[in-house]
Length: 91
Image (cartoon, rainbow, N blue to C red; front, top):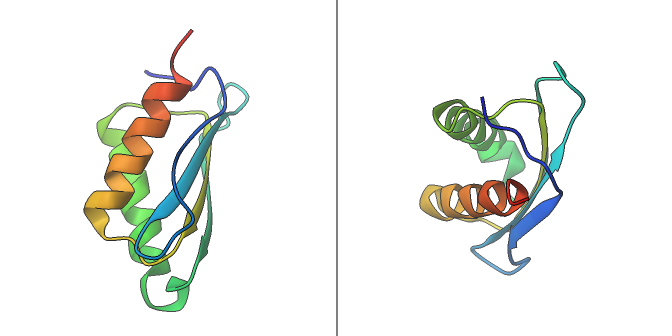
């Protein structure tokens, strides 16, 4: 398992981008995804499923993910999440 040690962020709050923050959670908390998106009604479920999928693939647990999305494509969301996770895993 991988864990977020420190709060970390990646991205920008600009059109077609996303600002993602990851925070450590207590042991056995699991994951929590908080989403604020300009396209949440249309794509909110998809975005949350995508983030959950990447967290599972990267073997992360006990993490809180805050996303401010401004219509980012999937590859942008993935890049921002992975970057935030790597930054949050630095000691």
